[in-house]
Length: 548
Ligand SMILES: Cc1cc2nc3c(=O)[nH]c(=O)nc-3n(C[C@H](O)[C@H](O)[C@H](O)COP(=O)(O)OP(=O)(O)OC[C@H]3O[C@@H](n4cnc5c(N)ncnc54)[C@H](O)[C@@H]3O)c2cc1C
Image 1 (cartoon, rainbow, N blue to C red):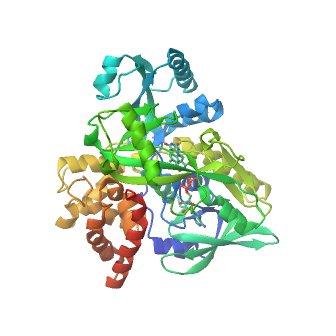
Image 2: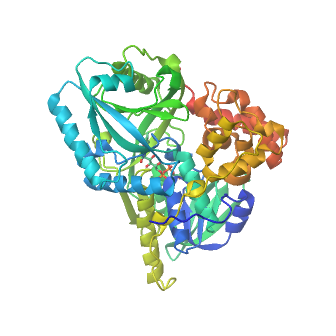
Image 3: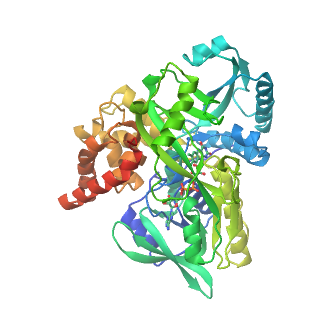
């Protein structure tokens, strides 16, 4: 499968110009929501020659798409629930995405220790044979069984009592926000008009049909209309809110399920393998995944009916996860004091009545409302490209039926490399005034766009300095985020373009003002604006702080 790169500049263009460019203009498609689902739809539609505008009420990936376990995986859990279609599609996508964005989507060995029941171990073994088979042999290494000694060498300190051995199998890891941003930048390079902090507050209708959206610029305050032949809702757990804007009697469509992750320092374990541990108090499986030089532990899975704008991790959520880990690593004795940060995300599960959220299918649902709005609910990060394909197929079908298209272009995103990670030569960054370890980190984080970050670092000595001494991130990334990725708030820069918020115990508070001043230099903020930005930063990042 030859994978194409984009020859044009990979950037989200100037936000003010993008807003200017979408106001009162008609597009083929208006996509509401800039998480991974909306971003994938924007790219697929643009790649098929449709004109596209995309808006997000917050920052790109501010919702669930920055709060996942960051796995591109088939989902062994779903296989155990006989969700074969979801698992097969996800395993196929795992392979496709690794080809489209090598380095951003990367193979990782996962270790699943087995305790107690020989029957259970045999059952999981059969499941893994099926997992490899459904993947069509497209894994670097099929699963294998290992004994207690090899396991002890891979994960020192793991409980040995009643241990039968372990399975090692392959899945992929990614960075969910970066994946979303790179998909958006690919869509932008093909002509999509994209803006964050632009909230849809209503629909424009003619003869009962939706012909556009009313938008409020949450930064500038301007209100405007974006017209679209098709309006697509990709708003994750917010979908019911938008459907009720369209029709106050719309039935509930998603059932939010909260999932919490903890971040702890890597040194607390000191090993780099990913684990899938069957040691939660209720028998669920919990992931321990190396992430950004730290360790990510998750997740919980509970029904949620509070504010969907700012889900919080409770002390009870944290203690559940800590107990799960301490059950597996008795000597670790992790406590709340070990937590660097927490994050809570909401799964947009397709509503299927009551029952245990862990058993609700991860399938997506695509439908049209009476006013002609196309909506998608549910799904997974891993399958975003296929979800986008199905939505775009429907959009294209409508455009052909309405005579706006004479032929139906087919999906091409399985051949479009993703952003700076599209396969291609690695740029030479040798001349930059940055240490080799920083250059390596930039290449890992931005792919080929690392060259642009390195050029910015060479502009001023201060931009080559670390943002915080304990992390490899440099100040040039903040400038890059403003100039090329539409970062417009301090949290955009510190919580999503970089992960300083999640990787520092003070959630980046100590450097917020310094970072704000760099952004002020780029964006022309005065002192009052900087103060207001710092106050908003405090409000937003408190949700990542460890609960008292
Ligand atoms: C704890 C947890 C772990 C997970 N782990 C994995 C995993 O490892 N692998 C995997 O494949 N999947 C995983 N998932 C699932 C995956 O993260 C989600 O399916 C996916 O991120 C959903 O993306 P989305 O774009 O549909 O929604 P979101 O990312 O929530 O995006 C919706 C967007 O719509 C915007 N929006 C809302 N209202 C408006 C409005 N009025 N106007 C404009 N914009 C609006 C929001 O601001 C938001 O950015 C996990 C989910 C959770 C909760």
